[in-house]
Length: 106
Image (tube, rainbow, N blue to C red; front, side, top):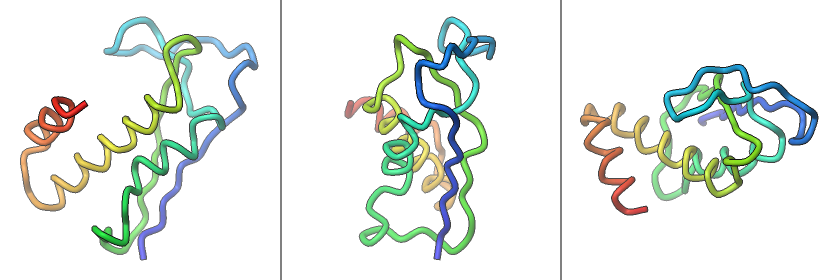
């Protein structure tokens, strides 16, 4: 059995400060708000019955978000992209190739 841990914090709107540097643009708010935890897990876990994960613990230990630019859709896509990267690594495939293919499908 695979156990997924997606820790989360307070909901959006608590006056959090964006002080986490990001390659995506302006600084982000560190952590994962409770508003996005469920969809991030859904994207990450995927369809486990059709494509089971190996036994173990999979923990999301870092996240960042933006009050204006983050959404449930964005976090589901991010979780799904992470799923594809991890599955590529498990198959010894090149993750960047997989990422490019997934993003092209968006």
